[in-house]
Image 1 (tube, rainbow, N blue to C red):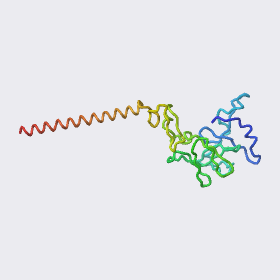
Image 2 (image 1 turned 60 degrees about the vertical axis):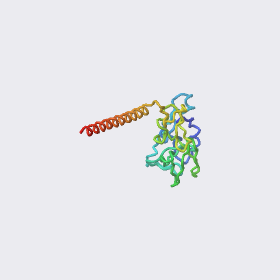
Image 3 (image 1 turned 45 degrees about the horizontal axis):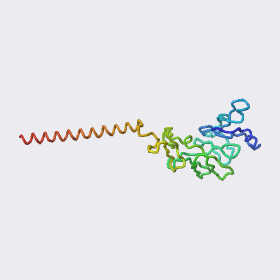
Image 4 (image 1 turned 120 degrees about the vertical axis):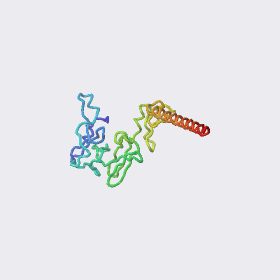
Length: 212
Protein backbone atom coordinates (compact mmCIF):
# COMPACT_ATOMS: atom_id res chain seq x y z
CA UNK A 1 0.00 0.00 0.00
CA UNK A 2 1.06 3.58 -0.51
CA UNK A 3 1.42 5.46 2.72
CA UNK A 4 2.67 8.64 4.32
CA UNK A 5 5.86 9.02 6.25
CA UNK A 6 5.85 7.08 9.52
CA UNK A 7 8.14 9.44 11.41
CA UNK A 8 5.27 11.06 13.30
CA UNK A 9 3.66 7.69 13.97
CA UNK A 10 6.83 6.38 15.55
CA UNK A 11 6.90 9.35 17.89
CA UNK A 12 3.55 8.24 19.26
CA UNK A 13 4.67 4.74 20.20
CA UNK A 14 4.37 3.96 23.89
CA UNK A 15 7.72 3.78 25.65
CA UNK A 16 6.75 0.63 27.54
CA UNK A 17 5.95 -1.29 24.36
CA UNK A 18 8.52 -2.72 21.92
CA UNK A 19 8.63 -1.12 18.49
CA UNK A 20 5.94 -2.48 16.17
CA UNK A 21 5.51 -1.87 12.42
CA UNK A 22 2.84 0.72 11.70
CA UNK A 23 1.32 -0.87 8.58
CA UNK A 24 0.98 -3.99 6.47
CA UNK A 25 2.64 -5.35 3.38
CA UNK A 26 0.62 -5.62 0.16
CA UNK A 27 -0.55 -9.17 0.88
CA UNK A 28 -1.61 -8.36 4.45
CA UNK A 29 0.24 -11.45 5.61
CA UNK A 30 2.87 -9.38 7.41
CA UNK A 31 3.24 -6.28 9.48
CA UNK A 32 5.60 -3.90 7.73
CA UNK A 33 6.98 -0.38 7.67
CA UNK A 34 7.98 2.09 5.01
CA UNK A 35 11.27 1.68 3.20
CA UNK A 36 12.92 4.93 2.22
CA UNK A 37 14.01 5.23 -1.39
CA UNK A 38 16.63 7.77 -0.46
CA UNK A 39 16.79 11.55 -0.74
CA UNK A 40 14.94 14.24 1.11
CA UNK A 41 12.01 14.29 -1.31
CA UNK A 42 11.26 10.57 -0.87
CA UNK A 43 11.27 10.85 2.92
CA UNK A 44 7.80 12.38 2.70
CA UNK A 45 6.30 9.38 0.96
CA UNK A 46 6.25 5.62 1.26
CA UNK A 47 6.30 3.75 -2.08
CA UNK A 48 5.79 0.35 -0.47
CA UNK A 49 5.92 -1.15 3.01
CA UNK A 50 8.74 -3.68 2.84
CA UNK A 51 10.79 -2.88 5.95
CA UNK A 52 10.60 -4.36 9.47
CA UNK A 53 8.65 -7.36 8.17
CA UNK A 54 6.84 -9.34 10.87
CA UNK A 55 4.80 -12.39 9.89
CA UNK A 56 1.26 -12.69 11.24
CA UNK A 57 1.47 -16.48 10.95
CA UNK A 58 4.49 -16.80 13.24
CA UNK A 59 3.15 -17.96 16.61
CA UNK A 60 6.46 -17.10 18.25
CA UNK A 61 5.67 -13.39 18.00
CA UNK A 62 4.21 -11.66 21.04
CA UNK A 63 0.94 -9.69 20.85
CA UNK A 64 1.32 -5.93 21.05
CA UNK A 65 -2.37 -4.97 21.14
CA UNK A 66 -5.37 -6.41 22.92
CA UNK A 67 -6.99 -9.24 20.96
CA UNK A 68 -3.97 -9.74 18.71
CA UNK A 69 -3.25 -13.32 17.65
CA UNK A 70 -0.40 -14.69 15.53
CA UNK A 71 -1.63 -17.80 13.72
CA UNK A 72 -1.83 -19.36 10.23
CA UNK A 73 -5.26 -17.72 9.86
CA UNK A 74 -4.15 -14.25 10.93
CA UNK A 75 -3.85 -11.24 8.65
CA UNK A 76 -2.44 -7.77 9.16
CA UNK A 77 -4.77 -4.82 9.66
CA UNK A 78 -4.01 -1.13 9.89
CA UNK A 79 -5.32 0.48 13.09
CA UNK A 80 -5.89 3.99 14.40
CA UNK A 81 -2.91 3.47 16.72
CA UNK A 82 0.77 3.84 15.79
CA UNK A 83 0.99 0.05 15.34
CA UNK A 84 -0.73 -2.42 13.03
CA UNK A 85 -2.28 -5.61 14.39
CA UNK A 86 -2.52 -9.29 13.40
CA UNK A 87 -6.00 -10.75 13.78
CA UNK A 88 -7.65 -14.01 12.82
CA UNK A 89 -9.62 -13.52 9.63
CA UNK A 90 -11.42 -15.70 7.14
CA UNK A 91 -12.78 -15.39 3.60
CA UNK A 92 -16.56 -15.69 3.87
CA UNK A 93 -17.59 -17.35 0.60
CA UNK A 94 -21.29 -17.05 1.44
CA UNK A 95 -21.30 -13.26 1.84
CA UNK A 96 -18.16 -12.65 -0.27
CA UNK A 97 -16.67 -10.62 2.57
CA UNK A 98 -13.87 -10.75 5.11
CA UNK A 99 -14.68 -11.96 8.63
CA UNK A 100 -12.53 -11.03 11.61
CA UNK A 101 -12.67 -13.14 14.76
CA UNK A 102 -11.71 -11.35 17.97
CA UNK A 103 -12.31 -12.94 21.36
CA UNK A 104 -14.77 -15.38 19.74
CA UNK A 105 -16.79 -12.48 18.30
CA UNK A 106 -17.14 -12.08 14.54
CA UNK A 107 -16.78 -8.71 12.80
CA UNK A 108 -17.42 -8.38 9.08
CA UNK A 109 -15.82 -6.06 6.54
CA UNK A 110 -18.51 -4.72 4.23
CA UNK A 111 -16.21 -2.63 2.03
CA UNK A 112 -12.62 -1.52 1.57
CA UNK A 113 -11.55 1.22 3.97
CA UNK A 114 -14.35 0.53 6.45
CA UNK A 115 -13.27 1.15 10.04
CA UNK A 116 -14.38 -1.49 12.51
CA UNK A 117 -14.58 -0.81 16.24
CA UNK A 118 -13.58 -4.06 17.90
CA UNK A 119 -14.36 -2.83 21.39
CA UNK A 120 -10.70 -3.11 22.34
CA UNK A 121 -9.79 0.56 22.43
CA UNK A 122 -8.83 0.79 18.77
CA UNK A 123 -10.35 0.44 15.30
CA UNK A 124 -9.06 -1.51 12.30
CA UNK A 125 -9.31 -0.63 8.63
CA UNK A 126 -10.77 -3.20 6.25
CA UNK A 127 -8.42 -4.13 3.38
CA UNK A 128 -9.33 -4.72 -0.25
CA UNK A 129 -11.26 -7.96 -0.75
CA UNK A 130 -9.42 -8.71 -4.02
CA UNK A 131 -6.10 -8.74 -2.13
CA UNK A 132 -7.06 -10.80 0.93
CA UNK A 133 -9.64 -13.06 -0.75
CA UNK A 134 -8.94 -12.89 -4.49
CA UNK A 135 -11.20 -15.86 -5.22
CA UNK A 136 -14.20 -13.91 -3.92
CA UNK A 137 -13.66 -10.84 -6.09
CA UNK A 138 -15.17 -10.11 -9.49
CA UNK A 139 -14.17 -12.61 -12.23
CA UNK A 140 -11.00 -11.63 -14.10
CA UNK A 141 -11.11 -8.24 -12.35
CA UNK A 142 -13.81 -7.32 -14.88
CA UNK A 143 -11.34 -7.87 -17.74
CA UNK A 144 -10.30 -4.23 -17.67
CA UNK A 145 -13.66 -3.37 -19.21
CA UNK A 146 -15.48 -2.35 -16.05
CA UNK A 147 -15.23 -1.87 -12.30
CA UNK A 148 -16.02 -4.22 -9.43
CA UNK A 149 -18.85 -2.98 -7.23
CA UNK A 150 -17.89 -4.15 -3.75
CA UNK A 151 -20.92 -2.41 -2.25
CA UNK A 152 -23.15 -5.17 -3.60
CA UNK A 153 -24.01 -8.05 -1.27
CA UNK A 154 -21.99 -10.19 -3.67
CA UNK A 155 -19.36 -8.12 -5.58
CA UNK A 156 -20.35 -7.78 -9.23
CA UNK A 157 -18.82 -6.20 -12.30
CA UNK A 158 -20.30 -2.99 -13.66
CA UNK A 159 -19.26 -3.19 -17.31
CA UNK A 160 -18.40 -0.19 -19.46
CA UNK A 161 -20.63 -1.67 -22.15
CA UNK A 162 -24.20 -1.41 -20.79
CA UNK A 163 -25.22 -4.35 -23.01
CA UNK A 164 -22.49 -6.62 -21.65
CA UNK A 165 -24.12 -8.71 -18.93
CA UNK A 166 -21.34 -11.30 -18.65
CA UNK A 167 -20.04 -11.83 -15.09
CA UNK A 168 -16.51 -10.67 -15.94
CA UNK A 169 -17.24 -8.09 -18.67
CA UNK A 170 -15.96 -10.63 -21.21
CA UNK A 171 -18.16 -9.28 -23.96
CA UNK A 172 -20.21 -11.36 -26.36
CA UNK A 173 -17.20 -12.04 -28.56
CA UNK A 174 -15.06 -13.61 -25.85
CA UNK A 175 -13.27 -16.91 -26.57
CA UNK A 176 -15.36 -18.59 -23.89
CA UNK A 177 -18.62 -17.41 -25.45
CA UNK A 178 -17.43 -18.29 -28.96
CA UNK A 179 -16.47 -21.79 -27.87
CA UNK A 180 -19.78 -22.28 -26.10
CA UNK A 181 -21.68 -20.99 -29.12
CA UNK A 182 -19.74 -23.24 -31.51
CA UNK A 183 -20.28 -26.19 -29.23
CA UNK A 184 -23.99 -25.54 -29.10
CA UNK A 185 -24.17 -25.17 -32.91
CA UNK A 186 -22.31 -28.43 -33.48
CA UNK A 187 -24.53 -30.23 -31.00
CA UNK A 188 -27.73 -28.99 -32.67
CA UNK A 189 -26.51 -29.80 -36.18
CA UNK A 190 -25.34 -33.21 -35.06
CA UNK A 191 -28.71 -33.94 -33.51
CA UNK A 192 -30.53 -32.82 -36.65
CA UNK A 193 -28.33 -35.04 -38.81
CA UNK A 194 -28.96 -38.01 -36.58
CA UNK A 195 -32.73 -37.44 -36.68
CA UNK A 196 -32.67 -37.09 -40.47
CA UNK A 197 -30.66 -40.29 -40.77
CA UNK A 198 -33.10 -42.16 -38.50
CA UNK A 199 -36.07 -40.89 -40.54
CA UNK A 200 -34.39 -42.00 -43.78
CA UNK A 201 -33.65 -45.44 -42.36
CA UNK A 202 -37.24 -45.76 -41.14
CA UNK A 203 -38.62 -44.92 -44.60
CA UNK A 204 -36.29 -47.43 -46.24
CA UNK A 205 -37.36 -50.14 -43.79
CA UNK A 206 -41.03 -49.39 -44.40
CA UNK A 207 -40.45 -49.53 -48.20
CA UNK A 208 -38.67 -52.86 -47.96
CA UNK A 209 -41.45 -54.26 -45.77
CA UNK A 210 -44.13 -53.25 -48.26
CA UNK A 211 -42.20 -54.81 -51.15
CA UNK A 212 -42.01 -58.08 -49.25
